Length: 87
Picture 1 (cartoon, rainbow, N blue to C red):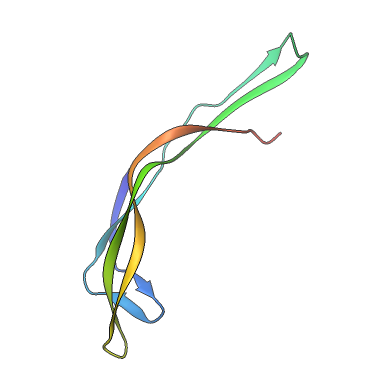
Picture 2: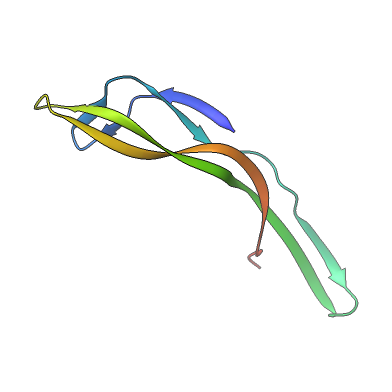
């Protein structure tokens, strides 16, 4: 899990304090091999994506001095997940 700290800007409203924004990044295995049984190439692919997430809230202050609560998703953990390869 990669972490970055930033302010949230939504509809002319900005977070009062910066929040921790998370993302997934990394190398996951892929494989291409010939199948004698199928007489064709077989491809195995996986990608790095969120495994566990939580919903969080942040208070935003708007230009008209009102405050709104904004929900966002926080990534707790990442994993390599099988995906269909594009031929």
